[in-house]
Length: 140
Image 1 (cartoon, one colour):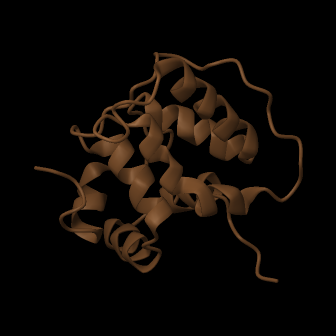
Image 2 (cartoon, rainbow, N blue to C red; image 1 turned 180 degrees about the vertical axis):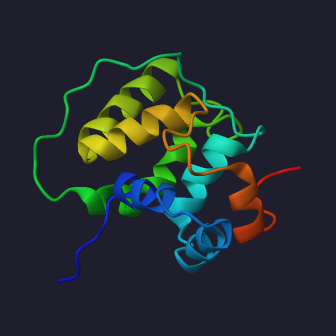
């Protein structure tokens, strides 16, 4: 079975690349739905989370090898974003968010919390890298 890097692990390795073109090529070569969701959530001003500021109380997942979970469930982010499921009760939305975090690898959960607050935890990744590697992903 192939080893799946968690999204946090991938972005951490990516952010340490030195050359701009190397970063752009690497992003383009690793284009997945999960990666697009992360990058849009962080950099696209039109993506607004319907969740309170700060980190909710949640139980950190202590299972090993959970890096695949975010890749598999990244599309569930839509439950927490404006424009999707407008009739979803806010307390239900927040409960679903906590349950989502609790299923993720601990580092990927930290990444999702950063996404929610529109922060990129890796300084080596910029909106320019994203716009060049994945044209059209970020709204102008």
